[in-house]
Length: 86
Image (cartoon, rainbow, N blue to C red; front, side, top):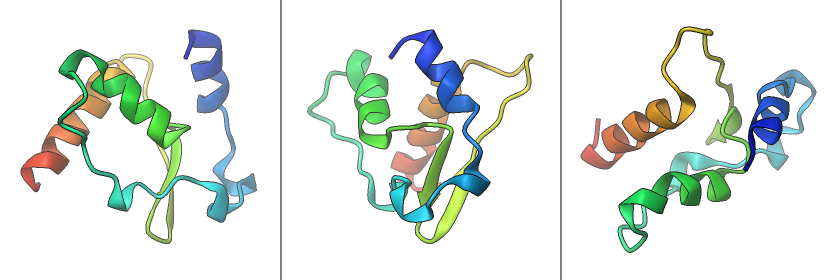
């Protein structure tokens, strides 16, 4: 996924999205057979849009400040916490 695609995905208006078309990440599991250096790309492929998704019936839109950490770092931290049960 290149930076142009990521920029377009970040601009999606979740209010105009059909919630049923958003990826439900509540049942996603980390695949430990995927090499660690490829896991972020694997999860992005599984999620579709990392900025708009749903958890169960709740639509989620993720936004970052310009001075926030990179999306990859934020997602890595999120999935590490999810894996540890937090």
